Image (tube, rainbow, N blue to C red):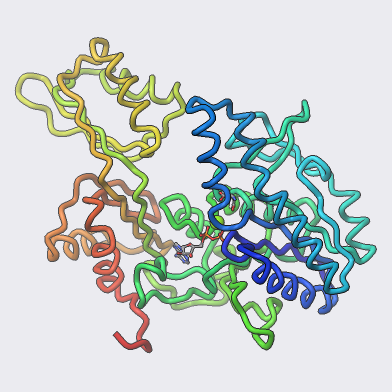
Length: 422
Ligand code: ADP
Ligand code: ASP
Ligand code: MG
């Protein structure tokens, strides 16, 4: 008998029939003898629809009111799941973010969870009641509703799991685990039985949207055991306790299980980056600081950076990437600083994609980047920028070549599933 947090994503909650399927999975987990808390997303597409209404109401919307609107999608599904569980004869109730409460800071639309008061929740679960919690939402100290950023229900689930000391946090979604790459792009992607926190964190942060990045860093910090698995299963499917999905584990744990680790664990693609080139920047100390200082002050995350070889006249080109959503703001800021920075022209390109290969095996093996560059060159794919970390190599390419590049690299690192037809 244990304590389990189960999280269901938007596709799993889209409509009465799917919610009934979810309720059955939840009921089975409780029947296996566990105390159960469920965290739910809004129905697929609902959050986008609500964001659209905010934009229509006021393009420069107040993030606090935006949160009031977009948090409602999860309120609906949590109530519906509680009702559906009750219809199956289970004891269940919903716990909205402010009722638990899930305390957050006041960074609306991207709030961070502080504390969760879980005493009442634990008492209710111990009494056999299934707790249904809307993901994505919290409350500030002065009682305003907040949301945690897109994909934030994963983080809600991990935070609840940490707060109640759950034995496992099962993230149910529309694929049956974490794959070597997005199985919707590469049919030969392989499902991973295990992936380390460090690798999953890197994969999530470079664009694998299967888990929100912050949910992984929180799980790593709090030691929460996370499994990714499918909610689209038959009644006779293996129970979650048999670990049919992908377990996120620590490096030490994996070393004990899998001695023959692959060099590369996964490949991710991110089309949400945009490229900025500043031409003829003065090649002198402090020039780069005048570019990136204002961007940092405006909370714009710069990712890849290249400073080209200086030209003869003491000038250089500086290329970097920012999130696509921040491109316009970055451009406006830089134009305003044109004189202080001293550049000649600003060139932007939103049609780029970042392709990353990730694996802890890289720490001890050379040649990973070389293989990547050769494989892309052989297919005529041009690399516009490069960045690396201890366990990752990323390249920036033309967005139109995303799918091709991911497939080519998947084959180049010998990751294709062997038993499937081509
Ligand atoms: P949910 O609505 O359940 O939160 P998401 O759409 O956020 O689901 O995440 C699941 C999706 O993540 C999958 O449908 C898949 O297309 C995508 N994905 C991207 N990279 C991977 C990967 N490496 N393994 C599995 N799924 C991935
Ligand atoms: N509904 C929110 C979103 O679409 C949160 C989530 O589903 O994780 O971003
Ligand atoms: Mg998600």
